[in-house]
View 1: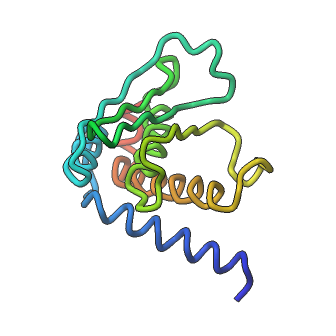
View 2: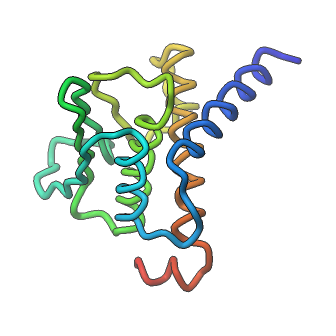
Length: 153
């Protein structure tokens, strides 16, 4: 097994644990997914659609989490389509659900793939991949059929 194979196996195992932690089921709404994460982690969480994002550059969403208060917020761009901002928020939910996330730290997701960001350390790279895997799995929960997905456009 190569080092890349080992890393991918670690990422997949973490993503599986993170996804299972929330107990998500197909057909849930996005709000139900957020509430399931709140229950699973015993935190208060809100998603904020930000109108003023001129200085965000490629940033599509970010998470602030305060472990001492057991609360956090996910900020996404209000100008983005609902399906796009939900995916960005789902990536941040993936960070929260990942058992290796850094409590109290600011996590960012931009339109730059973790594969294309040479500044990431190996643990950061793995954390981004875990969050991305979780976001894709949440999308499958939300959009179990083309008709469901079309309703969000």
